[in-house]
Image (cartoon, rainbow, N blue to C red; front, side, top):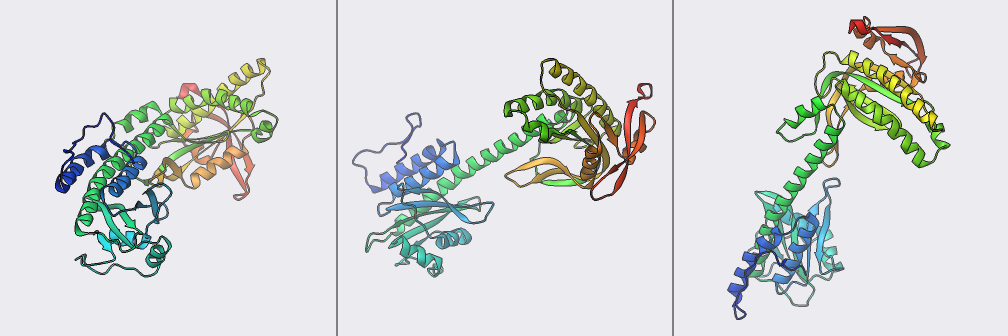
Amino acid sequence: MHSLDANVPSYHPNPSAGDAEQKLTLFYNLPLKFGAENEVGSLLQVIVESVVEAVPAARRGALLMEDRATGRLAMRAYAPRGAGAASKTLARQAINQSRAFVWPLVGLDAGPDVETEGDAAESIAEYKISAAMYAPLLWRGTPLGALCVDTGDPGASFRDEDLQLLQAIAHHGAMALSNLLMKEEQWRVAEVQNRLLKLISPQISERLMQYQGRLKLGGDFCNVTILVSDIRGFTNLSKTMSPDEVTEMLEDYYHRLVPLVFKYNGTVDKFIGDAILAVYGSPGQDKRQHLHAVLTAVEMQAAMSEVNARRSSHGKRVGRLGIGIHCGEVIHGLIGSAERMEFTVIGDAVNRASRYCDGADGGEILISPQVFSQVWDVVETVERRIATKHEGKLLAHSVSGVKRDKL
């Protein structure tokens, strides 16, 4: 059994205290005992062990909660160890009806009949349950799970006061559990925000840090510019290198390339192996997003040449970068699930940018006609066609230089 930490205050009755004072002691200590737990798993175990200890006739206890991904009731804690048992049907009934009850109903006014057919009957027979109690963990009208105890002793039963005690423990447990779940949610949101802030420009980071509301799933349509860079022949190259050498090579390149994305107000959407997908114009608007993407690409190629020169001087393997840039409408926002979300962009414009990247030679920057139409007066380009699997041959503009005097 879990016991109160020495640093946690508690109330101790006189050794000769009667049943009423023993219960009063329990109610004093429960909030302190539950509040001392900092993890959901350990809290759930303490709740179950507390109820088994408090209810005289209880031989086993269990706590079930609904799994967000599957919708199934998962057994999150039980006591004693190795003796988990519960009827999912009865637990579900306690949650759905938001009421506690004793099974079987013997002289108790517990409301509508409790279902004991199907799964419930099978569980009762399988675990040799002669009597049981179920109570929902309710906090501010929201069901968080179900707490139950049972016994297999022949002729055993639970009394009215046992049910009241179970409800009281379930109430205190639900309050503590709700508090911990809220803290975990806040921590998770903070982690998401921290990950986002590491992948976007300092200017946009500052803007998001000022956002006081909760991050929510959802996206909006937005016109952005997409830059995709990829090391030519990296897969074959990495086959001839050790894992440490591959990691070191990527760190050398990323260390120089990623800050260039930030320099021009871009956001690193994701890393895909040796590829970088960067977005301009999201999450913050940028009237010069097309030019900023092109300038990033030009400086990326210059940085690659510098890194390659240094690596070659030390006898290390080098790679060459192909870059493709396209613009268009995408959905941008927090995509995924409540458990795992990321700020990303989805849409055909992303796929088209990848096509231009695939068509670029090592050391080359290819921009789409849509991007060219926005930067035609500040870039020097050569037209060419690239072959694609699905779109046929696409018109591309190979960037050979930037007219700095026009910036």
